[in-house]
Length: 517
Image 1 (tube, rainbow, N blue to C red):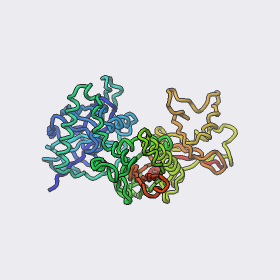
Image 2 (cartoon, rainbow, N blue to C red; image 1 turned 90 degrees about the vertical axis):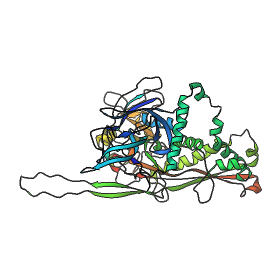
Image 3 (cartoon, rainbow, N blue to C red; image 1 turned 180 degrees about the horizontal axis):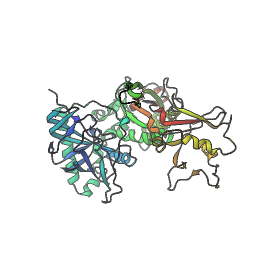
């Protein structure tokens, strides 16, 4: 009989340093009605800190776990000095992209409730950092930096409408054994002196896949050693090829943000299926006033499905054999820059104006988004043009407006920068700190090069909460070395591909401006 690992609470990620939080509050049920009683937890002295219950993403360790009147209180450390993923999780916490704690356990004893169960005994196996917890009260309570200071203490409330139900994963004995080995490795690193942790002399062992990938690019799979071939990750591409190692994938995403800023604000999800479906509520229940003995009016909820499908994006680069033979040539950096530019520009255009046929659906072409008009056929009104933007801002709900951003291209921004209020103050405010975003009506402005210019019938500006736009990544950067096609010209062709899709999941979070009377 296969044991089941149950995921019952949510975990939030934090920046480098110490994380203190409540992994499970006592006295209240979670979203499915389960209650865990005080005294039910049995756990080892040290537990792994995972991201999203993924055993391949160990980002830290929980070394203080205790039951208090408030709940299961935990304290742990992110391995930001040794694990790249831990540093990424810290960044997501700083931007509040994730804000919950989640526990993974096996139930030993429980009894049914009217809704859910009362769990009286369980074995705790791991605690994860997740975006949305099963228990709304499972939150980080304080975050301490490496120097011991506490930048802020707060509770983050989750929006239940955003919760996505996922099946409980099945964990095999072999996976549990590997997880225990990861814990032992983490403890060994934490017990080493700081100088030893900062010594990267042994890093070459961790970069074996990167070195093998570079050798593959330079010489081809037929000329690399068997050990190097084993270090490569085979692509799921039916045509063959190998996936770029993590170092390449991370750098690609960083470069993509320069061309496709939508990724920095939208919700990005990795999937492992040909498509993914999300339920969307169309209408909810409706209560009506009635007399003491009047008939009640029936009401119900209706739903529809939003289907997101990944599409393929591909390019190739030809490199001469002489360049490949030059060991001083930074081939991998040049390939990454070339791929990032090709993928980023094409992907960025699709995220804005994509048709949804053979490419992602663009945010400006998605259906259901409300629009307002400038009132002038080919421009803004000459008198008080800013009133149009103020009207846009108040067209969407306060919650989404408080998280919204303005999308426009640089040409449009140049026009709006010249507008002033009645007191002669510019509407667009420059950032207070270097590298920050300019703001309009208190919300950031995101320069999107693919947005329309101001002109008759055009849509030059969009305002809204970009969490309502979802991007799905199916296959990361995959490369294929072809030394045969151009062999007669002394060249090698490198193919690159990825699969990505996108669509608007919450059109009510956006409002767009049309230049029209």
